[in-house]
Image (cartoon, rainbow, N blue to C red; front, side):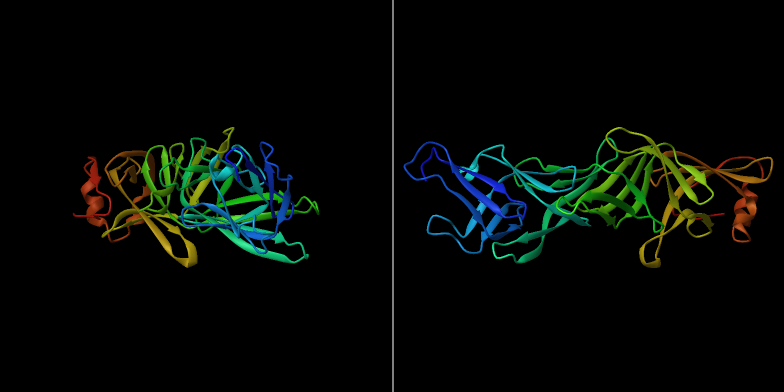
Length: 333
């Protein structure tokens, strides 16, 4: 192929690659090949197309396609081609796919292909990277690139927290041919950290820094746990989310918030606090993080929450002074 010649690529409705020769007249008749094959993504997040039955000597068994990744509003996987490999820069290849899975370092799509003999083929595509939240608290996946800034795949819909305190993302898309709508839900497995006044962190993989760092209002104790307000989506709107759980005070651990987690497990978030008894003999606590920073969260308990294990603690507060309780250290009186 001459340097001036370019290959234009398209994807047909059956997720098959179409190769079209374009550019200056080379004396070779223009061709448009619909190629049976499957897409693959390698460990460097590069897309290839494996041709099952190459048509003649001019069609390679494997085509390399390079560019930038994104997803469209229907959650299809899109590759915008660059100028490498004789491609036409700026062309978009849209794989009709379903977003079906999320690991701490991967995003997963299912793809269905129909070959020229009418056979159906199902396979998975995975991109590697890490999860983050943007300035509008939208979930996004940063596709890792060796020498370039990551490509960002934005999940534009809203997310919720389930009864196991996991972040879940649900979207609905319409199948073009049948007009039927399908709904898929992604469940993110992680744990919560409350590290600042206006930050709520959901950690998926600490080593990779794969986490959702949500911007929130001050936390407010609620009947079922801890409540926050935040904006979600490209046009922020007030939304309340609640971390389900209960507040407890233990002589050995100190103050902690105990939350139900996956598979019946419990997660504990420990806090420091400034404590005092008010005139009604209620225990007032101003919460602090593990780094001893003020979290802006105030709790009020009747002193009998301590039962018999913290009597010395209550006695130490009776003269009206405040006592500082360090996170995770328990009572030392």
